[in-house]
Length: 484
Ligand code: NAD
Image 1 (cartoon, rainbow, N blue to C red):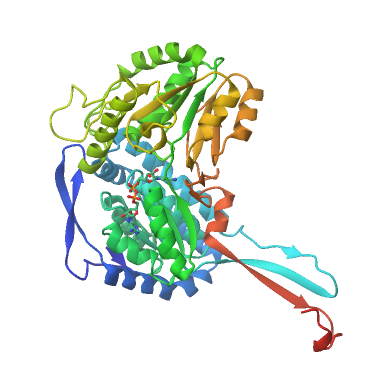
Image 2 (cartoon, rainbow, N blue to C red; image 1 turned 30 degrees about the horizontal axis):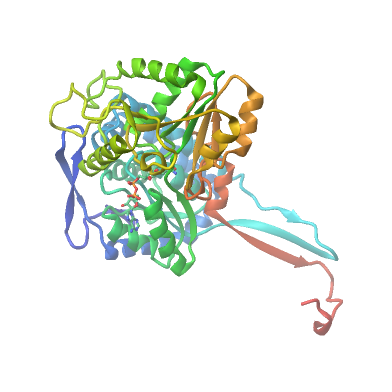
């Protein structure tokens, strides 16, 4: 682990295994950090916080740029770690890692451009605001996009003068540890960036409940998000919650069907469906539903599923035995609740090892079925048919989640009318999701609080200080006449 600029084991000496999902084999052992390791990391971050806050923003930006160059120079290593740990197939992992410098550069550019404002007030007075860092920020990361999800929150945190303690997911700690090596090489002062590996209920909970942690960015399931929010409430830490989804992918009768099919496959098969914004509810207009599903089935026949290190692979394994069993149990539930149209098992071309699952489509799913309402987090989608836009909107919004939605239509008027009525943090028209540092990402309802990315993320990593100044030569009111 990386604490206070030093490499260390857990104080207890405990470790846990990390498994390659492509083969099911153990590839490394990771320190199992506990509350005492977390306390040391938070102390280190708290000790470094004041100097880092008052380091010139231009100097903080320069360090982030140096880090960005080091990430670029280490793309191959980071991509292999992401592939062997999280199950991204290698060429996709390379694309993902190649994009990471965008986030570091966007926020290094922002470091000296985030300012407060001056406010007009009555009388001989001036008021202004200063945006200040929170201090120590905690970053609790899931296993599906370990490096990207960590970088998208630590980049603004560091740029805006906060110090960081990262807790990677127990299944995928390797890229965060490699990244810490690059932070060290870039020359960040000790304590500014720390990584504690370990279990969620131990290291994660200790981090979320540490009273010196002033801001928490948690990305993960809604269920764990609730626990983290409770822990944060004990010491009133600021919270960003980036949680789960059950996103509708809506196809109108006038849509370009082949493009919509392509988008739908990306929506539920990208990273084997382990994507927060996965299009796991396919809302098809009745007039095109059968034709759409025929084309979807034909296109899915070409999908090459297998080991992420095989060049031909387009869809790798799911991350762990636990996830594999969970997704398979939802497929069983789906068989009871709806009509299995495509897939539904282990692909015929893979051997007995590794956690591979076929793209699976259920048709004629009732809107309140479990497979239509619960996040499965695997390559499974539920087709729900509709006839008019009012019915469509009811179906789309009938969800506890509100992360993301997609609309396919050639009518921009219809698209914008529907977009304005969807209860989700993002709506994409005629495209699939491409995460970028410039555009805000986050959910409504039980999909989260706050926004990552875009200028909106500034609010998650700063607090407002108001400074009021009386410009009178001497006070013109005595204390008893003062308004408050
Ligand atoms: P998870 O909730 O199981 O774990 C996320 C992180 O929380 C891990 O680091 C884990 O160790 C930690 N954790 C677990 N218990 C904890 C506790 N009691 N206290 C503190 N930390 C604890 O999620 P996951 O299975 O790793 O990730 C999948 C979930 O993440 C899905 O629901 C997905 O939708 C969501 N996700 C959301 C976004 C987004 O931007 N909205 C992005 C990626 C993933």
